[in-house]
Every structure is written in structure tokens, then in C-alpha cells.
Image (cartoon, rainbow, N blue to C red; front, side, top):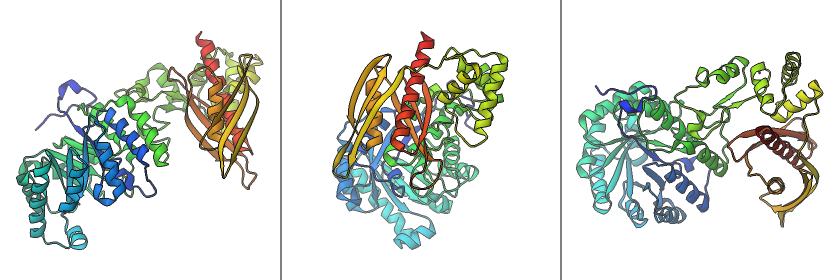
Length: 511
């Protein structure tokens, strides 16, 4: 039995696991998601730059625009192999070949329910079609991936027979799809082990997340001998999605010690790009890349990670490894150690009694459902201590926005930055976007907007909205800030000013 390395001991296992990304194909099949050409090119470049082995660029036969997109991605000269999807028909394979892809991915249903209801073919006909189409594809490209659609609901003896036919015809990799997400880690392990006994060919797995087991099933398949996993960024895809890229890669790398070749420090960056382009927000509790993946609010947890991060984090996976930052959060569970550390970072040193009062005030406010941002903490601390430490380096002197149905949204901002008047005018995708860009343009520091969220505090057309934002400075530090107003543009501008003041306050203390 092959020995598996546990807990990040990569040196004890040299096995390379290939990562096959299908964000641009299966990921785009998420209901409501449609990437533009430029977005697909951006995603392809970013994913290839991370070190994946294969990018499934799309399904060329599905439309003329899809054909042109796959062809253009193939022409980029990316490091990753570019793959095109094809049904088991010659015309589909031809469209892939015309795109000049490195790999053709052909599939055919093999389970009884799929075979009888979607393609209406007998088992014998499926075997004959498999041999013919794989052989045709292999005559024209060097790499052919064959998928037995709905493999996990196909009887194993017949499944092995189909895979043998594909390999005999020239398939270079066979794919085991859990098409409707019904496998479990134990059943997936047994299936991959059985296939390995019968079929001598590299095995790839494609797991869906209908029962939230896509990542676990992918990892289990690798433990059983699969050498390639299919993933999508943020786990997007049909129905409940696919195996999540970041979670799968980090489980394989950090827990099992395999080498995926992925530059994991870019995981958060690419996750946010795909989230922005797809319009699907990443939940704060999303593993690895979510905002809370390395955030701590509980007093016990915060105290622990301040002393040693491994107390309440995996240890074998650090925030820096995935492009994240550890963050101490404020709320009704916050503890004194976290608050003291956050205040110390900006040069505020309350007494024990003052610290108790600050913590109590935070918990009181949070117990009423209000989100506490960092700028709130410093205002509370200043009020409790009466220090007058909270001095704003940036004050808003006025702003104006212009928008309309036939007007390019623009914003003009006038601010006092360290005593000097600054004016900036920028355009954007909307009035808020333009205002954010204008504000960032008046400060000399390199600051980027990482997150922007709006929540209604009250109802009606004059509802008060609370804007929460996070910005990142040139040192990779992330700062949270917020503001409320019945004017969402005003709340956004005030939140950004609060965030920029946090950046300056931290820099002052560092110097």
C-alpha cells in the first residue's frame, strides 16, 4: 500500500498531482454567470500563472462566440495546456481541433439512467462510440481526456470496460466524474482503487458538490491513486458547484504533502477576481480564501493566536501561504488581548481600567447587532481615554458626483491630506466606483480597495445604509472601516476616508 504523507511533510511524498481547472467551462455553467471575452482572458492568464497543468477553456461547438474564445485563449501561449470539451461526435472534436487546443476532452454517458434517457444508446453502442471518437481525436491531438459521464452511478465492471476501450483507442487520461455529487469519500476511494486495478492509465476526477463533499471526494480519490483533480475557483459550477480550487489544493499540499505545482500565494487574489467577474460573492466563512479564514474574534482564540498562531489555526497552512492576512476582529466575543494589541499598533496605551471600559463598550454596541470596524475602535478608545489621539490625516472638504442614463459616471473630490489641499476627478462604472477611485487618487500612498459591502439598516426608499469596506496598503496590511448614511454615496465616501485614515495612523506608529 502506498504510504501517504500527513500534516505537510512534503519531503516524505514526492508524488506530483496535476490540477485541471475548469472555471471557464463548468464554472461558467453556474446559473446566471456569463464571463465576457476580456474576463475569460484575464482569468485564463491568472490561472495559468498559478501553475495549473490544464485549463479547460470552454466548449467550442456550443456557439460561435465560445469557439472564438477558446481559439483566442489557445493563442495566448500560456504555460498550461489548453483543453476544449467535446461530445462524442466528430463535429465537436473538429471544432476543438480548429481552436488549436493542446487537449481534447471527450465524454459520453455511461450510467444506465444517463445512457437510456439522454443519448438512448445501448451499452454496446457506447463502447463502439467511445473507441471510435477517442481514436479520431487522438489522430489529431497528442492529448485526449476521456470522461465516462456519471461514472459514480455506473456499474464498476462496465465502467472499467468503457475505460479500457478508451485507453486502447488512445486516451492519455481517463476521467471519473461524480456528475451529480452522490459519491462519498469511502465510495470514491473504492472506485478509484478498482479502476486502477483494471485500467493502466492516469486517472483524473471531476467532483460535484451537491452534498458538500466535492473537495473530500477529490482528496480521497488522490489518496486512492488518482493523479489529477478538476477544480473551479470558488467552487462555482452547475447546481451546487464543483470541487473548490483553493480548498482542494491546500488539502493536498498542506495535509497530505503532495506537490500540485500551484503558486498558492495567489489563491486569494484569483478568488477575488473570479468573484468580481462572476458576480458571486465569496462567503466570509469560505475555507482558505474567505474573509474569516484567518480572522479571530473570540477572546480565547485571539489570545491564543497572539501567543502562537498554531493554537487556533492549522499551522500547516498560514495566511501568507495563500495570499491572506491574519486579522483580529471586533465583536461581542472580543477579548482584552486583541483590543490591546490593536490599540498598541497605533500607539494607544490605555490603563487596565480604561481597557476594560473599551472592551465593555465594544461588546455593548455589538450586542445590538452593529458591526464594529477598526475606526470605531479608535473613536471608542479616544472617548474613554480622553487622549485626543485620533487625529485625522485626511479630511473631506467636499465632493460631487455626476451620473445618468446617458452620462459617464464621474466624481470630483476635494480633501485635505496632511494639511495640503488635494483635488481629484475620476470616472467609474457608477457614482460610488468613481468616488472611490477619486479618493484613492488624492492620497500618495499605494492603497487598493479589497472589499465593499452595503447593508440596509432601515427599510423604505430613504433607508439608512451601512457601508463596510476593507483596503490594503503596500505592505499587505488590511484595514476595515465603515460609515452609515441614507445617501449611499456619502456613506461610501465617509467609509473610504475612515479607512485611509487608518492606513496613515498605522504608518505613523511604525515610523
